[in-house]
Length: 464
Ligand SMILES: Nc1nc2c(ncn2[C@@H]2O[C@H](COP(=O)(O)OP(=O)(O)O)[C@@H](O)[C@H]2O)c(=O)[nH]1
Ligand SMILES: [Mg+2]
Image (cartoon, rainbow, N blue to C red; front, side, top):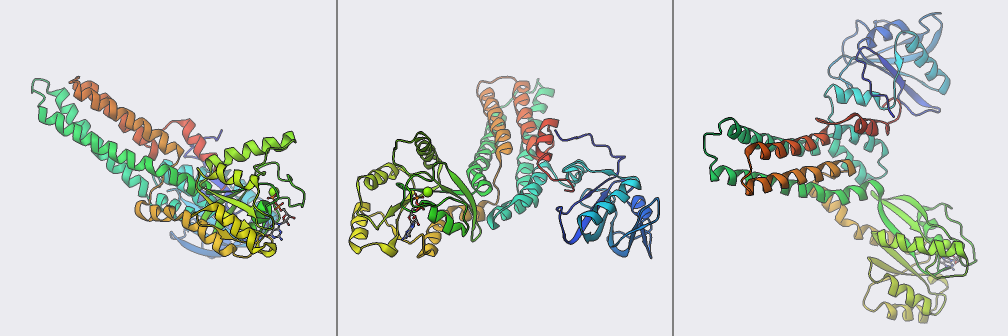
């Protein structure tokens, strides 16, 4: 659990750059006393306590007790409220060494700051209204993004694309609630059929908006976890070789013996901006070894979940029963037949395979030499092109937490709709509308419990 006790009195400090050696390391300080803490450890022309906001100063860090010199630094002063956390913030750019940055941090602690918890800077930004909760989540996603497209989506969320849609929906719900409450306050005035019709129309529009946001979940998941491409086919056709070649590394074990890949291996790949999860599988052939059979079960599971299956064939051999069986097994899924080993294939085998595929288009590659891999990559990108198009049109993609909240919003809206149709009291309808307003508020953190906050901020690193 993350410590969520927000103590506004505390001034916090942390090394915000990753551990290890680098050009610079940044020690960040935030809180009421940030400028005073900085003044106690910094010696330069201007004291941080007197420096103007958003100015940079050259000087040195000394230990506040002994006065001993620790490092030559550049210190940036950012005064509240226009800072990341909304509080007074000082950033010290010191030399990027493990020991030196640690010593600078220790000096700030000596001078009155306390060590920050993971994500505490962002938590403060949230508490101080600099970011809403969906934007705070976006910060974590930007840090974790592994491809251009995932990064773009996270940046849109940080810019408040989702927040503004939720804001609009909240506005409509508040209008509806006001109308219902007027009816509660003035019960003697007859509830007109007109009002009911208006409410129903507003609810229908809100439900539609919920649906549109919920539709973005799948895309969001694919952006976060990668477009999953399963490499399948009977043993020894070159699945692991293809994975390795695509990754240009040696992650999977490649041997000339059938059945080496018994487990499922997955690797992440940035395919010119597209996040791809490549999954190497055991062969599709049932076999004597128990472990291998387990692998085959897992293979089937992966195929079920895949966005695309690359079904490999070995063109150095004549197509056999197993190949035909593999083709039949996969034909219900989104797949692409890939003829491998063209470097040692006979024209006759290739043509025999292509006859098996009928009018399904296929491609010829050599996993060993990398022949035609560019064409294969292009085909993968094309089958994922909906992601890019989708993103360009909608910009928003929700995560699992948003989805749970939206489903509850929808549920309450349905109950409200039902209540109106059944001519129940305005109080009853208003209660449902209020509940959907609350669930909507969870997405941006307007109404949210500690556990959810904790779950979100524990994913952050220290110093963010
Ligand atoms: N000549 C040739 N051999 C290949 C090619 N792809 C894979 N192989 C060989 O086929 C054997 C089986 O490959 P592997 O990747 O382990 O197959 P898997 O069982 O489908 O994962 C290995 O000896 C590979 O070197 C290829 O394109 N051309
Ligand atoms: Mg293998």
